[in-house]
Amino acid sequence: MAGPGEYYTCSMDPQVVENKSGSCPICHMALIKVKKNSLQTGQIKLSKQQIKLANITFDTLRVQVLAKEITLTGKVTTDQNLSDAQSTRVAGRIEKLAVKNIGDHIDKGQLLYEIYSEDMNAAQQEYILALQKTASSEGFADAAKNKLLLYGMSETQINQLKNSKKILQAVPIYSNADGFVSELSAAEGNYVSAGAALFRFASLNSLWVEAQVYLPYLPYLKTGTEARFSIPAASEKLFSGKVIFIDPQVQSPERFVLARFQITNPSQQIKPGMLANITLQTEKKKSLTLPIDAVILDSKGANVWKRINDGVFENKMVTVGMQNSRQIEITDGLEKGDIIVVTGAYLLNSEYIFKKGASPMEGMKM
Image 1 (cartoon, rainbow, N blue to C red):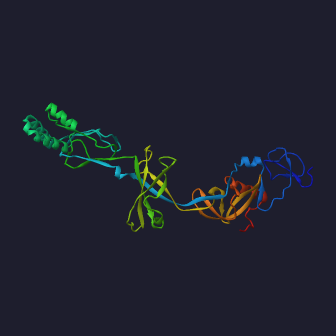
Image 2 (cartoon, one colour):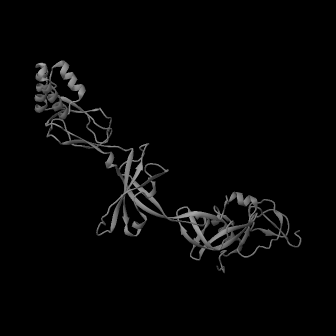
Image 3 (cartoon, rainbow, N blue to C red):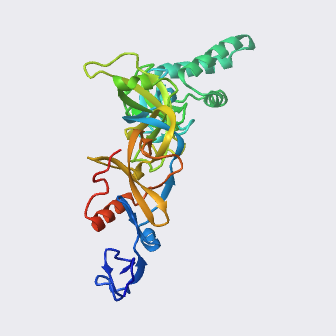
């Protein structure tokens, strides 16, 4: 039998209260004798085993740097500063196209196409004739060579022409840059004019993220502002970047400005066209903060569970201030150094209601 100030309960089901030993009617474990406690309103006591099973963890209320966060949505695009175009330098017909697909990766010096050009053939013939004349006509040979270089022939090709004295009917043209083909305006058999852009190459080592920034958020942005990027289609990890351009003109009637961020992409996981979530931190200040999971927010206000001692927890109403996705400011209700439940706060709430039949915030005032 239990003596004065004692009772029997189950370590797994503490709602079971008996005045004599026996087995738990719920889990059939042996009841244990405990002393009645003098818990105050809003307090609850758990055994070490219950704390472990509920995965209850703690954090200390302390002063930290807290920043307000602004979240924007943007779209990944190519970095136009790293974009190259390759144009024809002479009019002619595309005899053979070596690169036919947008998205193909091109290395510098890779064959792109072969072109037949009457102007190119005439310039080759002029060079061969200039080489056959006397030494006094050396200046004519140099002029003819420069003309071939302007038409797009390489030094190697010109040296081959010099040695063979045979005109290249279809002249191979090679890439002048590395990158992915983003635009392709050529087809075999097409006649192209001088200066026509046949290929555009885009590098993925650095990319832009463009976002619409509405006017209330504009004061927090300036060139060089750092941001974090979540791109779910590319990776679970966060990327970092900064603002490189803010459109000076407000778009109407939507009333937003275009902001451009630059991010590095060394592993080339990020692709143009992907959507990005952009997080900016502003209004940094030092304040008493907790992990955001520690605070329970409902219609009655905000509350936390404070650890009084081993196994005893007390529900405390608090006043909160600024918050972001990870932290929340505590402006009243707690003191620096208080130990607060982080994971398991909602479980404690449920356990209290189960045992007491009422919310721990009933009748509480700040």
